[in-house]
Image (tube, rainbow, N blue to C red; front, side, top):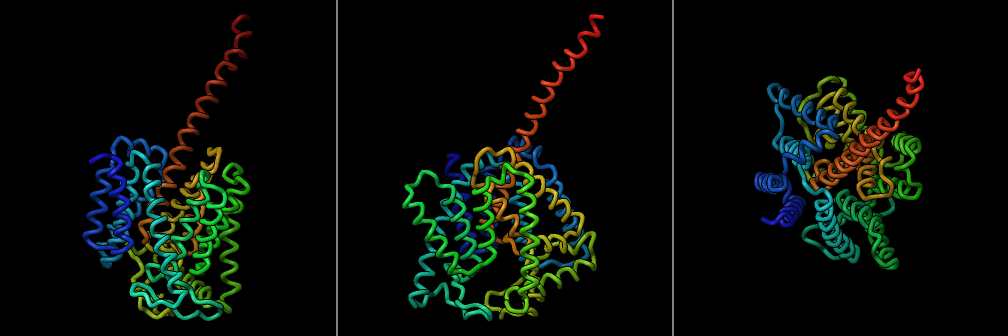
Length: 394
């Protein structure tokens, strides 16, 4: 099979996952498409730049497998984490990350078009067999539109991802570029997923102030955003049902973490039915954490969580080697921030984009860092010889 067609097969598999979800067929097809793209040479080349992340993957996998001997894990949890490790290891061996990103960009745009059409039809009062308009939540003025997958979070996510790619489309005419951005922002507002408002704001600030080349401001802004969101959640927990539930679920997860803080409980993921009534009891019993960072801590313990946070910090540091903005910078910044108050590792599309961005930034940063050190060493050696030459003449 021609190499370009293999990337399109991977893209088609991603679309199939969006429609059919986790099952033996989709996971097998995903594995097959990734095997066709895998290169052992690229894998070992990329591993050099991602030693910390590889240690995180191997460490959490080892903990999870050990815990399986003592604790049962649901089939959905095993499939979700199986998908995570499959993508982590397989995408390290991609020969052409840019081609993969290009294919996934087309996938994002196609799904966005379907999502926007679904929301417009719901707005006009049509009854759709695949989607319905939920009742307005307490403390909110408008209902949240559910889009093509009957899920407000997914509708917000696909709108945000489409915005990320469109912000980087420099070759489009200005009027068309603005029209596309307006349509995507409109659909994002319909979904009312506030976490993606924060994600979009972070990308705009990154581009506007070129924070990728201003390390101190980037890291201060990153940590400040996390503190601000946590503080805002706490302050509005009495007037917003969403933030009230989020705050309770965070506290519930922290209580569970204290029971086994070093090694966690092993593989676990939320088991929430689409038709479940939204309440604290139902969400807590279904294993909802409202934070992927807390989920990692619950499953694999504090040491592995600290290692993952170190990976994020290292990747932010390596952004400084980017002379211009690229879509991977915006995707990594926003999707990594979202892990603290949400995250979507169960969504193979978002997870693939997160990993490709993580790998791309670290690969380029690592080898540029090595080149800088080599040049610095080369410049120092002649200077040392020059300093020693008078002594030799004496």
